[in-house]
Length: 341
Image (tube, rainbow, N blue to C red; front, top):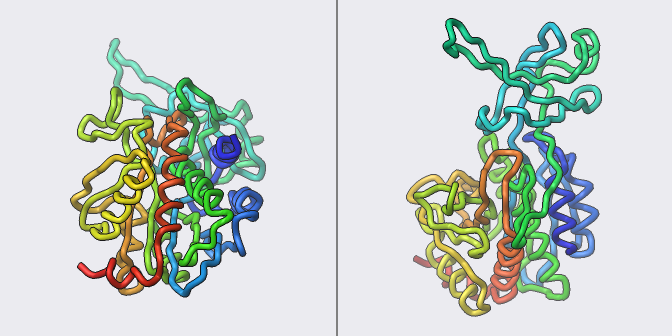
C-alpha cells in the first residue's frame, strides 16, 4: 500500500508545465530513504541520485508535469474564458477545476449553448467561480494556470482513477524501482529524474540529458489502452504488464536486453511499435550529448488527458520491478558490447 499512497499524493498534486517545483517536496520526502542526494535544477527537473560502484550511469525519467488550462479572459459576471493545453474541450463539461491565482479558487466548467431557430449554432465553455467580476479580478490574472481537480478513486480489480495519471503513474513506477533497489548497490550510478515541461515539448528531457550525461536513458511514460473504449489500433491492455517500445527511437540491443530481463524474472510485458516520433521524453534523450542509447517503457492507461484517467496498480508495480531487475543485472563491463549494432 506504500506505493498506492504515494500514487495518491502525486496524482492529487497540481503540477502544470513550468510549475514542477510544486511536486519537489513530495518527491524529496518519499525518495530520501532510497537516494544519496536529491536536487532540483534551475528549470525544475528533479534529480534523485543513487550511487553505484562504477563510473557509468543509467538515467530513468518520468515527466512530472500535467496537462492544464490557462486564463485567457475575465468576463462580466465573474466568468473566465480559458485556453487548453492537451485537453479535449468536450471532456471538460461540468468538471471541477482549480484556478491558481493569488490564491487557489475552485471553479466549475459550464457549457453555454446558443440556439437560433431551434438550431444549435454555437457552444462555448466558461469557468464559473461564483465570484463577481471585481472579486475575481482581484484574485485572478490573465495567464494564471488552471488544473483539473479530482481526487483518486479506487476501482475494482486494482484499477485506479484520477487526474494526471499521465504521468504520475510512471513516477510511482520509478518509486517502486527505487524501493526494489533499496538494499542493492548496483554497478551503475542511477538517476531517477522527474522531468519538466514534457507536455509542452519534452524540454526537460534534453536539459537532464546534458546535466547527467548518462550512458543509458530510459523514459517511462504512459500509452493508450487498446481495449474496449480504447485505441483500437493498439493491443495494449490494462493489467497486461509494462509496454516495451520498438522503433528507431529505441536502441535494439538494450530493448532485447529488457525483454530478456522480463522473461528471466517472469514479469509480464507487452510490445508496442512506434515507427517515428514516440511523443515522449525518449525522443529528446536519444539525440542529446552526441547520442544516448535509449529505451521507452510505457504503462497502459484509459481516458488519457481527462480527469478520470485509469491505470492498473499491477502495471505500475511490474514496471518498477522490471526496471529494478534490469539495473541490478547490468554491469559496466557489458556496455561496450551492448552499444554495438
